[in-house]
Image (cartoon, rainbow, N blue to C red):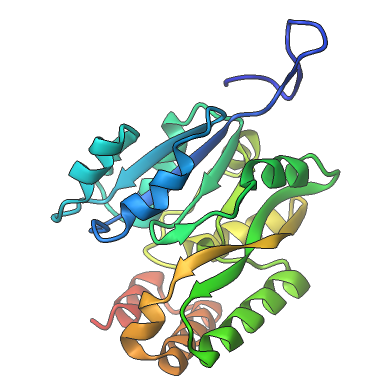
Length: 241
């Protein structure tokens, strides 16, 4: 699949592994171009937008940018990301939320981390685009959890080799917690490394209900998952249904 990790057929020329960036979206017209445009000037990456059935202008905006657009017939973020991975041509997969921007030089950071012995996957630290002091506390808690428990979530842009993703069977078909469940399986295979650089994610979901309430809901969902509450029920609770 694509170029190999190492020397190409031409002597003394090192082939850098290609990175496929998979972006699952649903009605992200307000922000999707802001996420994609900074990624367009790099020839060593592939951008795949996996749409879950947007009814706004998301698909048209993606097409204007000239990147790959696929429609996931089943909907659901895990389906979207698995479908994107299935058509990806890169040796590395990077799963990026539609409201999250990568740091400068992310390609080199990712390749360096995945070249480390025993490392099977990685993610970035989290920075939230907002001025409230409470958001700084969320960042501290998220980054502390990531470093000490090697447990990043999807908004931290999880990345791994395509071969590793295929070996563990991709994302489980869950309506929620698919990123958490993937990381827990990966932890049994190797080290999860957190890059000392942050992605910048939108504060919109914290702003919608408030920082405290959003954080509390997130923790209750995790607790419910551990207690064996069906993911379908957790997804309904998370979305307020």
